[in-house]
Length: 323
Ligand SMILES: [Zn+2]
Image 1 (cartoon, rainbow, N blue to C red):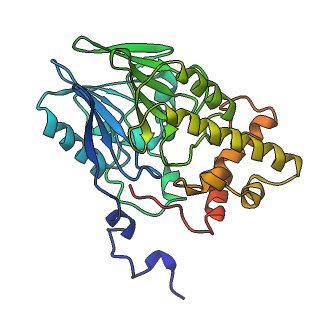
Image 2: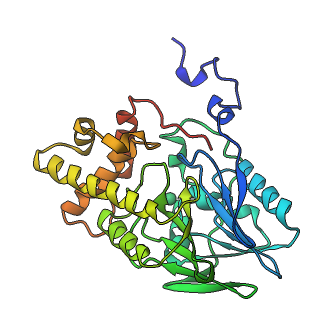
Image 3: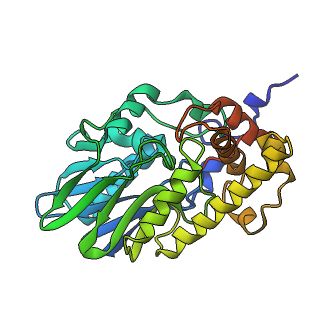
């Protein structure tokens, strides 16, 4: 009996999934400020961005794999020859921090808890458990080493970039935004997915709702979400709509004695079924159930079980990863 791990229909070293990832691109979102958009924004395929100032470049986040991070560096280089002096991490997830090591000249800035989580998880092995295989490259954990608790302002020439911790667990227990008030421009990290299913498994449903309601008051006109195309504030309401739907499914499923997986299987995702990575409903329900049970926001849940049930929801197939 042959093992599926050695399926010869896949060329070795180049998973078929990699071939189908559309190319990344640089998009100027304001004078001297760029989003680096990596389509299609699904699992592990994140956005970054950078500001070009007179003394150098400030980057918001790195990428998941060595190859993608080096391509991102090349993209910065295609815009400016100035040194990359600063790298800000919006949260600890590997798609935003695994590539930190490729910025040895930069001061890496992040929330205290972002540093703690990068140190605790390292290059987390769970990346190989639930997703289709990709070439991750030679990754080394590299946490923020200039940390803050509430926030810090980084200056790109005359331009203020306000790095603000959101104050409560939301997408994770360590989310920060990068807000550039003079340009009404927001780097939202993974508080916002545009075209992908929102994901709060490692954070909080209630916390994310609270944070997004506050974000609406910021007055952002241009938003670079953590995944998906550059957008405006309308995406905040779309994500809030999903979270309300999620909370409703959780309440009814829990009352009916259904497990998160069962509740997800019995639910018609409706308008949300067309979002990328719809299996996140299961991980999100694990978090929503835990909160209904009284677990504090961001408290520990069984992530291995949640990942396993997302795979089960996906027909037992590994989750699609184009990283
Ligand atoms: Zn994330």
